[in-house]
Length: 136
Image 1: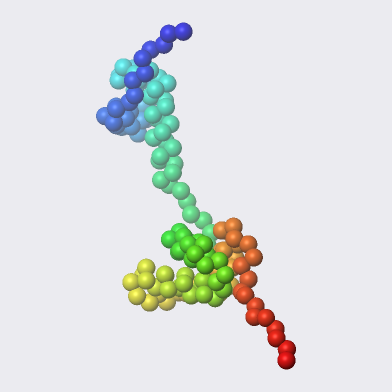
Image 2 (image 1 turned 45 degrees about the horizontal axis):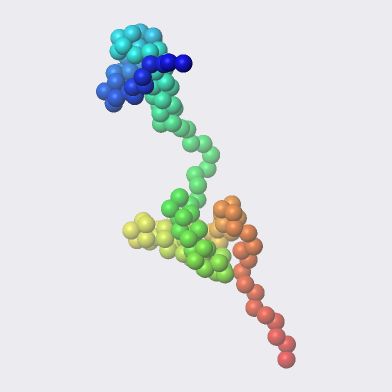
């Protein structure tokens, strides 16, 4: 079974495909003009359309309380000290927020927000350590 030699698209050819696509030209017309097969042009057109679809993602609902950076900080803190209380982890999150903002940030993370976020990250059994009861 013999086929044609594979020749990847150059950046110039990708640009030459993108411009006519945005003007509404067909894949066959673009392929004929460039001397490329219709399937190669269709593959590049799919990539262009997918990139355009990713660019216009609509955000709906309430904004997230913690940013990705703050979530990574929480995760790192729990890995480093698994026996820390939720209050100390919350304090760390608020400190990180204020440092990232370049000073004091007015909106702090609630103590009740952090346990749910930690559970959503996949950590289990993060309950504050209880002191032992000693009776005399």
